Length: 161
Image (cartoon, rainbow, N blue to C red; front, side):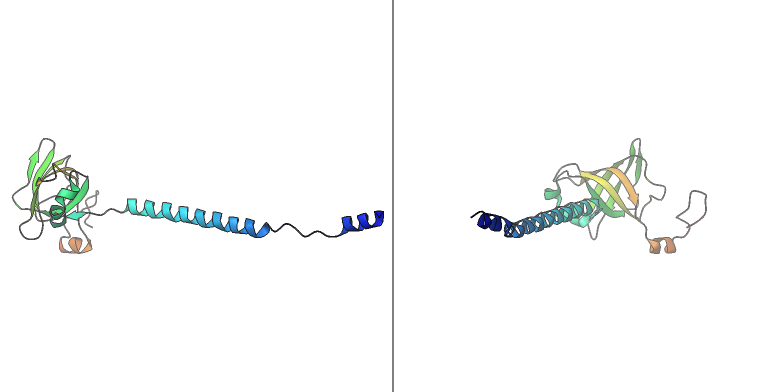
């Protein structure tokens, strides 16, 4: 009898069947981690994009925009620029008859003038107002603008770009 007990003690035993359960658990953890990384990257990329609303788009969405801070793009209407103690005021035009009156704080960029496209960071005074309170003016110019107006874009050392 002792020989039978020794023989049964030396008989190989199969490992527990939990290996498949642990591999499914590992796969689940990896899928969750990949999902979290994808969500974090997509949110980071979406929040870093800098979009702007044209005057026409902003006026069409004025009630939904309310007083939320946006970037408003339009062309500075000739004869409307007025320098103030705290910055400048002017009218931005869209296509057709759309106009927004802008009061911007801070000094405008050197290239700021009438008949050029600009982007103003700020908000509408109210959800029904045509007045836009700006905190920053950015002059929009592309390579085609520079090619058409070579003497307007100057480097700090005075050379034309």
